[in-house]
Length: 358
Ligand SMILES: *Cc1c(COP(=O)(O)O)cnc(C)c1O
Picture 1 (cartoon, rainbow, N blue to C red):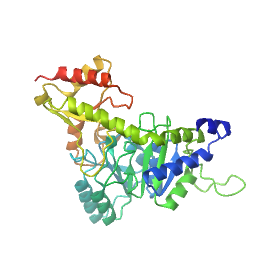
Picture 2: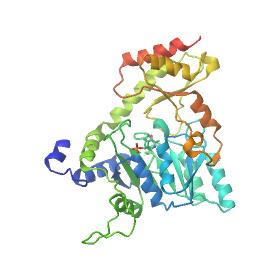
Picture 3: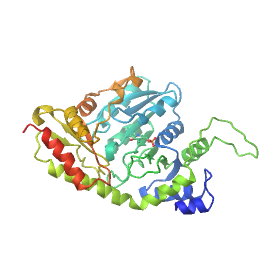
Picture 4: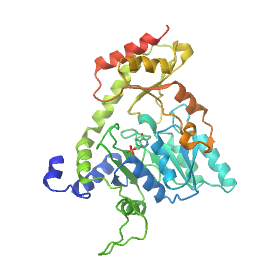
């Protein structure tokens, strides 16, 4: 497909690979429509603009996430308000969200949008989140950047809200080195996003612009890279799940180790295998374990630092935050790439076991 893209001279920004990638992606995950863009971050920016987020607006967003789930809110000159996680999935707590929407609507400060994040390959509990958003008529945007291949009651997260997006960054389950996909059932939203993503040109023979656009379209060449990988999504999900299963089985006896839960509502891809370490029961804390791994040249990272603790977002409002703080304090993401060998996994497990007091 890459050759096809090269040979057909379609290295220009738009071209047939791009449309085929959008079409095949949309079919694969069951989305209404899809727009391929240069990153997940760009997709979120377009989604926020698409639901009308503007200067001074408030947007409720998961606190336990990567900064890219929040930064585009600031690109719109809007204010993020951070919502804590719930322990069952580590994702946005639906009860906190419903309460916030109720209280804020009652006092005339209804948020302009909600951004829910599906972390580490697992869907948030979408039904109560959607219900709350519908009740207060606030559009829901889904950050499914880490959740391609996951399900929520049999359907792909990202396809439930007004808009959703995925990422094809280098570390994601499918990668075009950089790229993203905006999905939505709302044809008008997608059509406008397509225009904004390509410098907002008006239909005219000359270059006419009524609004400020962006250069956010994915290139035809990278779309070919994405297309080549779509058929292997299921295989990659199975590989990640099998890596998780092996870690879980070989560390089941360790006291104080808890893997990220499997919520009952769908399939967790285990894009990353994450766990928490109770320092009292395990005998040493997460940082000791992380450094022991680092000494063996094994990279393991703490779970996302909550956005309400980030200096860049100091002073922003938040709802709860303790659940996310505990996950950050004790959480660790283990090496989980689909190419990881059993020998490499055994080494990770050995190092962790050696840290255990028991
Ligand atoms: C990777 C990621 C993004 C951003 O995607 P890019 O394609 O890197 O811009 C957004 N949110 C989450 C949760 C991510 O992990």
